[in-house]
Image (tube, rainbow, N blue to C red):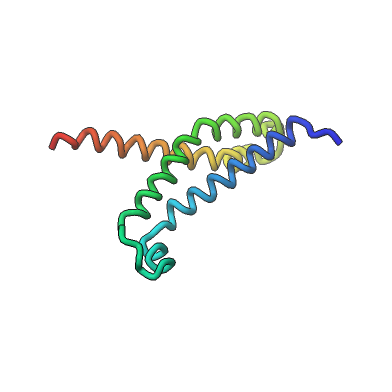
Length: 120
């Protein structure tokens, strides 16, 4: 039973999609209530969830280019351009890449805003 290139590529894509789903979910639903309730309010820093939230945003931003490359390879390898409903399938395949690129844009926006208003 030989595993071909298409199967390996699809598994890499699914692992990337799972990582994007986990990080986006963590970035959206991360709040102080989760941290204070899980350790009965003994957690000292109120800003720690925001730091982890920024780490999730950074991880998604770093994964933008590799995820886009994998999405392109999956799109070409599975011959989506010759299938029915090309537009819908294209956007569904590239949805994790869109999310990563939006996180990259948001992170770059935060960095530029920090350095722009740093002197004021």
